[in-house]
Image (cartoon, rainbow, N blue to C red):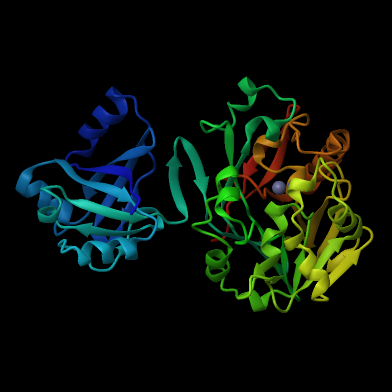
Length: 430
Ligand SMILES: [Zn+2]
Ligand SMILES: [Zn+2]
């Protein structure tokens, strides 16, 4: 079992006095309080490096924290270890005779699942196991979110899904921008890689469309190591959270065929053969992008993996579109070029409102400044022109922009004030 120190819990009796020490005297930043109703406590997390301190205050006299403070006074209450699979961890402990306070996990702060192990089995320390929820604390100082979010746009429902995190070289992600500038926006790991998410988008209207599908599950361990892939939460989880099955998807739309967008288009069957992963769907791909993927060159070959798209043609579910057009009511594609010659974004309109799924035109909110263009882009001057044109439109129409690779921000509006642009993150409906 792999476990990481998540936080140290401290039972507090006099909160203002505790804040005077941890916040004011130590100068630490304290996150917004969170109530854990099931335990009748209010928790305040204080990030310290890769883990946190958690100040715990009872909200009712019968809370375990109130009883603890009455009996022993305030102080160290528990340590929390983060595990990937809490059910498996509990089964292992039980098998070895550990005394468990919780035989099955219960809900904890931040939508996590938690379970306590009795101090008698842990040499006098109350140990909490935790399987993180979608809102995760920063790991190695890097904030992240794997949550799904729902937005209403006129008649349409937009659901941003999640297929995992991966990492790419920070230098390559910001092209000509010097590292001293981009490290202010994002934190690289020891291999100089920055954290990225994969967030496909569902559009529900007269039909149900999925735009891009993340990395999928066909890749081996070596690939996962190179690209720092973490799919412990992936499209299977987030589709289910959205109340959808793979059979619900009528149309899969590709912005382009790079593996972090098209990998999830196919899955291996029992014989190991890659087949379409959405059994009822028609897959819509731009013709020029299809031709380029089939005739990859030395520069782009590593991004185009034939198992991600060849099975679509073999299964007869491929629809090639030649130019900008409406794919379903409310959803149009528009070529941006730049990243690849035929890279396209999706413009979504309903009830007088506009959203845009811009894919690798603007992979993260950090790419907002015009010259912050990925080194991966084949035609960076075209990206520059496409960004300028898009900003003008997005500001004028108050477009809700989806950031497919941002590790935290799912969607936001671009604001322009005194010649400066920024992204105002949008608050999802749930
Ligand atoms: Zn790409
Ligand atoms: Zn990408």
